[in-house]
Structure formats: C-alpha cells, structure tokens
Length: 193
Ligand SMILES: *[C@@H]1O[C@H](CO)[C@@H](O)[C@H](O)[C@H]1NC(C)=O
Image (cartoon, rainbow, N blue to C red; front, side):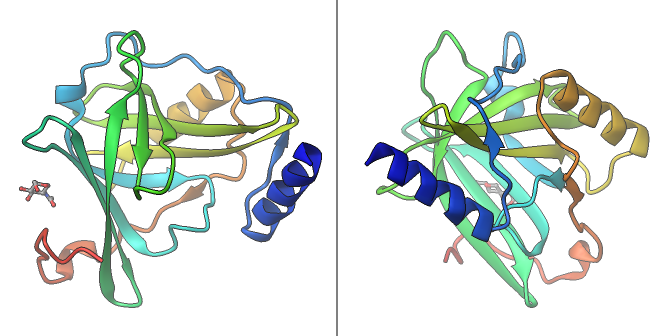
C-alpha cells in the first residue's frame, strides 16, 4: 500500500511538471543564528525550481507578525492581468533550528518545510523545501529571493553554487518574471482570494 502511494505521488509530481529525485532529501546547511525579525517583510522571487502552483509573474511574498505573534505569509502574483494572493501561516517548528520554518496555506494542509539556507536579510535569501516520499525519492522546491526586483547575475550565480554545494539540483531553475510589475495599480492587503 505504501509503495503504491509512493508511486502515485511519483506520477502526480511528473504530471505537475516536477521532477522527483531518487533517494531521500539532501540535508543542506541552513542560515546560522537565523534572525526571524530581520527576515520579515517583502521578498521578490528572482528564480525558482518549476512548480505547478506558481505560474504568474511579479511573484512576491510578504512576511509579517500577526498580533498573536504567528507569522502571516501573503504570497501574490499577477496572472492573466489580475493580482492573485494567498495567505498562509509560518511557524518555527523547533526553536533549536530557527531557520527551518514551516509554511501552510490551508488549515487542512500540513506545514511544508521552508528552510532559509542563507540570507543577509537586506539583499537575498535562499530558500529550500524538500519532502521525502518513503525515503525512496523526494520532491523539492528552491527559491532565490531578493529585496529588490532584480539581482546582479553574479549574485544569482553564487546562489546557484550554494544550492549545488548542498547537493540540491538546480539545473532546471528558471528566472521569475519581475518585469512591468510596478506599473500595475497598487493593491491592498484585503483582496485575498
Ligand atoms: C505587508 O503586510 C503588512 C501587514 O499586513 C502590510 O501593512 C504591508 O503593506 C504589506 N506590504 C506589502 C508590500 O504588501
């Protein structure tokens, strides 16, 4: 039964355009002494491993604290000329590993890993998410985030190198489109979908 479910997950991921990798998740280093407060705020997506659930352009994520100190995560994109947003919740699951966040976009979904591999808080952040399927294979996501809509190619190259040094396969990473985004009408936080 377990093997059957693993096979189903494998083929679903293929159909969704993700390439599952054989073997368990890599165990990358994460940002030492991660400072969540400094990480908060607005991050633009510069590059990503292809994912089914993000297909628009001008993708960004805004991290803020709710009054109850939980982390509010609002991701937005422009798809077919419309701003689409989803709101999720972030948590630090184990205070011993503060850079290993979990994010869930729905009450019914478990927290997916959202690991900050490295960040200087003011320019870039490298984020990785990996899920083991029975340690037979794994599905992963990786993102290069930036405080600005563009990054110098040299910064992108060194980010790719950091992923590769941690055994993360980023050959299929694609650049996100952040062009023409600031021409759109300003949107407000309460048009959540
Ligand atoms: C980020 O979220 C905060 C809190 O809801 C809001 O005040 C701020 O305007 C948002 N920033 C952006 C760029 O959306």
